[in-house]
Length: 128
Image (tube, rainbow, N blue to C red; front, side, top):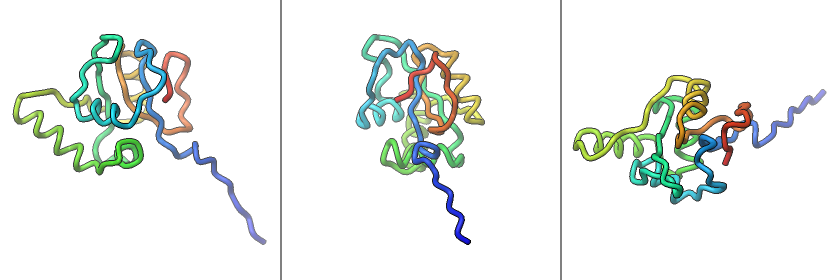
């Protein structure tokens, strides 16, 4: 007997989440790259951007880097290390779990992060 399980593509997809203060409906890939490489520091409405990420080895972070930014996690690490060591910029805030990331974005005006497509985010979070 054959037993199949149909999985929704959204179940394992990565979604971009922002604090409700962001007020931007769509975030193109080029803008995501600028934000997560710490080159764009403010939203279009002037609010400062706070970037939250998971540790580089976390499977969700690896999927986010590849699927949403089109780069490998080690490339992001390299960008962040250069910023940190040169003193020319700040690095994202690393949280340990997807739940912590969601809570941090929820609590921080201007924040951006990512979540599993199946994760319940609540009304105060924008899902892109």
